[in-house]
Length: 85
Image (cartoon, rainbow, N blue to C red; front, side, top):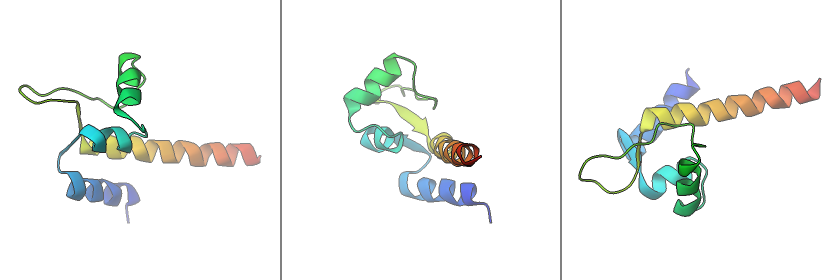
């Protein structure tokens, strides 16, 4: 069983191929759009976010967001293991 693929499938079912708006910034861990926008200005967002012609706001591929969340989880687990030694 591939937990990463299951998580990605869950997000895809919930959001479709793209995540935008409040869903996007909360998935990335930001409490407000202002915090998200500030991080975007400072190039501190590790997920490719982009605009679409004739659409408002920022978008990201659901698969990219899922991979980023999984990477954050893996990093945390690895830090926990390293700190126990």
